[in-house]
Amino acid sequence: MGLAAMITACGDDSSSSGGKIISCDMKTERVFMGETLTSHSCAEISSNAVAADELEKSCVGAPDFGITATKGSGCAGGEKKKCDSPDGSGAVYFYDADAADSSCDKLLDGED
Picture 1 (tube, rainbow, N blue to C red):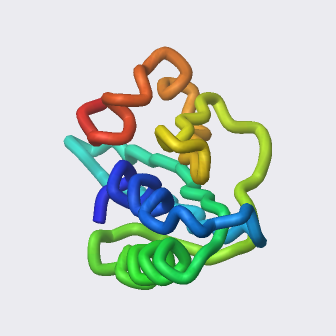
Picture 2: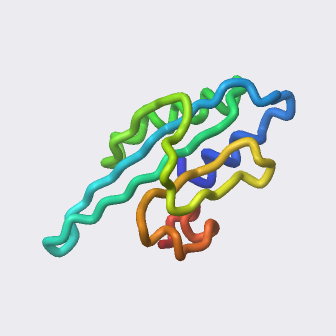
């Protein structure tokens, strides 16, 4: 599940009342043409049964895609860019300097 799908799933249950916050902190490291490329982002949502389950599945499955993922109760501060879900129930935080100049559409779709 991509980042956009993670936070879109957050709004699937209109009964969400804010509740506790759950998060999935994701870090990748890949070598491309001898250069190590790293990426750090964190998806955070207000919990409800549907959203919590979807985020947990995504976070647990992340190592299959070479991603180090850690479940938590909120994302750390210091982000370079924050992209909110359309209904405001979730967000993805990007910590890489190059994210600051990118649009949320590109970041969430993985085009950048």
